[in-house]
Structures are given as structure tokens and as C-alpha cells.
Length: 379
Figure (cartoon, rainbow, N blue to C red):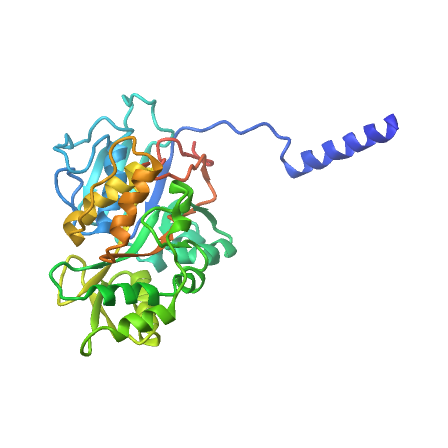
């Protein structure tokens, strides 16, 4: 028996050594330039200058965090940057940003010497550059995560932490029953399964299940019968105009799907493309927000700060340290108005190059982890 155990131990050890899993962990290396590509066009890195759209706002938040600044404040970027892990070395507005490691950073010097950020890269350009090894990190559309992974690219996906919702424009005479009918018409599961390629989850409320634990209380299933009944109660030939970002292929696909769902349930909805920051005669718009915190009370308060002026919803945000019941009540008040129609929760997806080490996918409220990343082939 002892001999058999010894032989088994020897065979197992040999297998581990052959697979490389028994080798000692590699030590982090200092040096090198981390190459990054994003789709956003960041026009200003001054934290006091507002972003022109949600995509720029998200990227600017990440950049300002690396510089030790906070968007919306009067920053100290004049020339080099703040007190963060990096400082500004080169800046070409809307095109290119080079950051250099800040040796005085209180958290310790970053492993990489610099970070080069290329902006305004289309999703196709980013995906191709990942596949041929021209970039080390690129944000990729979540619906492309599975295909990119199958092509051999390392992919890191966050928990679903970005809400895609339909927001009705204040002042437009869309009756309550029409707004509710549209919500019942939408096949959220089909959006997740076919448009997002199962990268996400249907949203009935304003918080994901992993954060609040109460998402199951907000139904997400399509209800054609209820929708038909409500559409029949509207007077005249009501047509809802839904606007979406002309440069966002995901929004376009979702808007077109909603138009089909509304028609099948007896409603009329037209999807129209809008340039970023522009407005037309749309009755509703698609919007996307990232959670500011993993904690449900803080996340909902952050979302309501945006929804207040955008949709003019009348609900008090949960107080600091709110109970689950207080969070649910505030969430229910907004969703029950049907002025905001949650659709899906989507994750953030990142493609990583072969030489990137120690990557930690950021959680809500966290920035790109570039201060902790190191490169395999750094000198």
C-alpha cells in the first residue's frame, strides 16, 4: 500500500512539473510601456471640464483616477498631473495620452514605466490589434467577448455592472399606459441571449442581483397579453420615437429589437439614430450608466443623481447606510413610474495581451488597475 502511494505521489509530482504548475511564482518586473486602446474620445483631462457623452465620462473617470484627480473638481493637472500613480507625459486631445509612473506615489511606484492610451479606436480596430498583439489592453464590446476568447485572446469580464435603460424625455405627452405597455412588450431575455451573446442579464430593476439581492422582485419576462391590453387603451395612433447613439452599435441593435417587440405587441415605435450629445424629437432615449459602487444604497443614490435631471423622477434617494427595505422602496418608486424602463445589465470586457500580468478586473467605483500590472518581457 505504501509503495502504491509513493508511486502515485511521484507520478503526480512529475505531472505537475511537466505542466509548469509546480514552478515557483514569477516575480514582478519593473519597466516597459503598457499599450492601451479605447473607443472613447477624451477631449479634456481637466477634471473640471464636463465630458460630452457617457463613453467619454467613463474613460475620463479612469484616467483622472490614475492621476489622483476626481472628475467635476478643480484639479491640479497643470502640466503633469496630481498625486496619483501616474503623471501626464504627453497629451494630444482626443487622440493620444502618455502617462509616466509617478515615483512619489504614496502607494508605491507603478511597475510599468509608462502607459500609452490610443483613443477613438473602433471596436474592429481594437479587436484586430488584440489578435495580432499590437496592444496590451483594449476595452471590447461585451457581445464580442466570446468570439474574441475563441480566437485565442485573453478576455477578462466584470460582473454585470452597467445598466442599459430606456428613459422617457420629460415634457413629451406619452401616457402612463403606453409607457407601461412598452415595458411589458420588451423581450429582455432575447436581448441578452442574441444581441449580447449571453454576456449580461435581464434588468427589471435599477440594481443587479449580485448587489441588491432583490432583483428577482422586479419582473423581466415579456408579457405580450398585458402589453396588448395597455396599447389598446391608448387613444389615436400613438407612435413613440426612440433615440439611440448613432455611434453605438449595441444601442442600435437594442433599439431595433425594441421596435420589433413593440410592433408584435400592438404598439408603434420608431428607432432613430442621434449623434452624441444631440437631441431631436425623440420621446425616449437609450442610456447606459456604470455603477459607482458595489454597495446597493450608494449605487442607487449615484444613479438617481443622474436620473433626477434626465427623467425628472420624483423619489428620494436612500440615505447613507440605508436598509435593504429603504433601497427597495426607492428603487420601486422609480421603476413603478415607467419613466425609466430598465432593460439589461452588461459587464465591462477587457482584452489582454499575452505579456500582461497581475490584471485585476475593476469593480464598480474602481479604475483601471494599471499601477499593479507588470509586463512579462519588461527589461
